[in-house]
Image 1 (tube, rainbow, N blue to C red):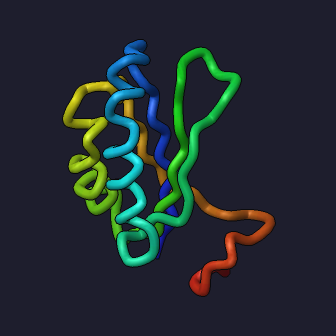
Image 2 (tube, rainbow, N blue to C red):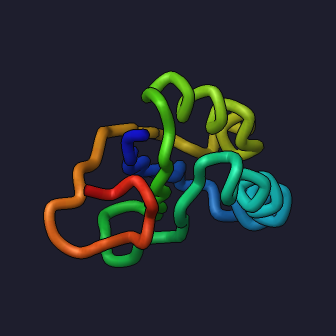
Length: 99
């Protein structure tokens, strides 16, 4: 399976984000393991609030399908979502399928 890096860029709506963060995190947690999620978390220091998620999946479309059900996506607080294939060149994520 391929690894995909997903970047979320959040809209400038901290009240809505704070209100719905628990249900968003609950949903993201369901994707761990069998859902393909390797890791996720916020990123700091950029121009806008953002997060990085790493998935192991068969395709970009498979990741999109999972993330379309994220409550943050439905609420429109994710202003931009980018999904790209990521190849580990050095180091390890501890995955069985790494080369």
